[in-house]
Image (cartoon, one colour):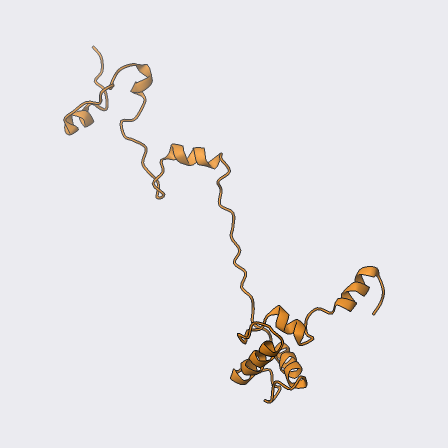
Length: 143
């Protein structure tokens, strides 16, 4: 006499047998439950397949521009003061009077007059990269 199938109790509880319950030896070892989906909603098989496609996430770096230091603000205020735009104390505190002076400078030099510190504004104030020093360094000359 054949031993009853271990899954027969489960079949009796649910009330119906799977369509190919004992079709052959290869299906006897298979589970009757479908693969449980993961948190992403994919089954284990689809996770394995996508792992081989090179779809791994790359870390994303979010670079945030940092605010200038008080010393840098002091340099900018001094340059604005030297050009006659800034009338307040050169103390490194960037406030409304500093923004107003920068806006006026930007408008006078055909720059975007938004009062934000941009590379073009700094170059116009003479605080951008020193191209002569860079050229000397690249050619090997000493300053």
